[in-house]
Image (cartoon, rainbow, N blue to C red; front, side, top):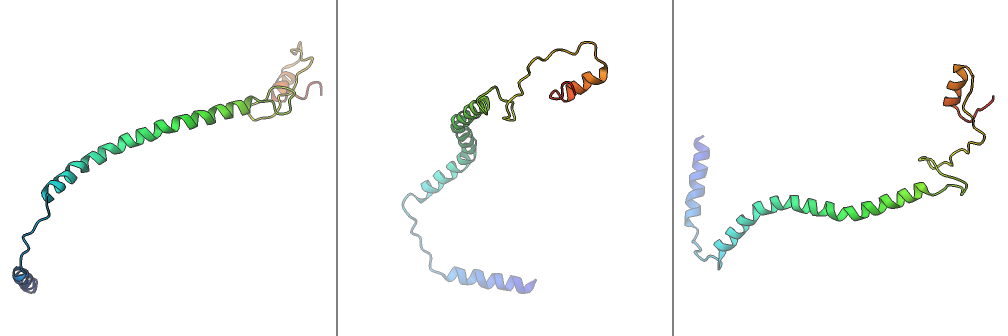
Length: 118
């Protein structure tokens, strides 16, 4: 420990010998105080910057939403409505509710509506 104290004493002695420069730039303390006052404001301002960027993103997001909705509603082949997957909905012609059929055929009809009468 004595070696570290000797090094510190020598360092302080040499530092005291350096001629002092008492010139301070004009309004130095005012500039420093202005920087200190601005530092917390930038942290609080981060939330307002985030909120502002989210509000700016609303318009493009709504435009994309409208374009996708129009694209999903447009008929795929021009013959009928589309399903959410984009496939044309199957046209159901002469579909009658199953009359006195057994439970198995009703379940099969619910599972696979294209296989009517097989």
